Image 1 (cartoon, helix red, strand yellow):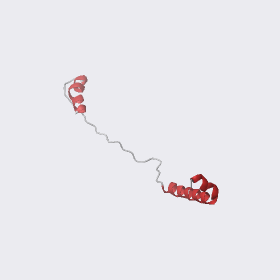
Image 2 (tube, rainbow, N blue to C red):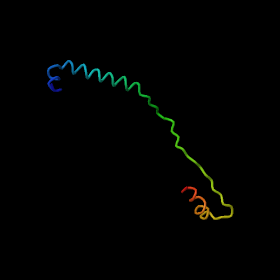
Image 3 (tube, rainbow, N blue to C red):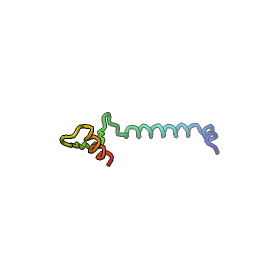
Image 4 (cartoon, rainbow, N blue to C red):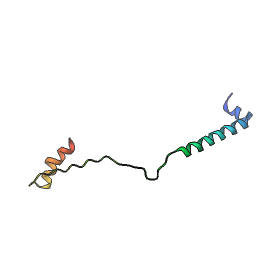
Length: 70
């Protein structure tokens, strides 16, 4: 028997099945944990590179870039 024939011959069965699915959906929805502002922290590493007496471009090219690429 296909689903269409069952639905036509027994409409009360289909109504009950949809009711059970609907109630199950409501129960599942109420059980969901939803937060308006969830805790979210992105991992961040801060490294300060220093090269006394060097120009900023020289520090960027000879110290900072190799550290970032490593």
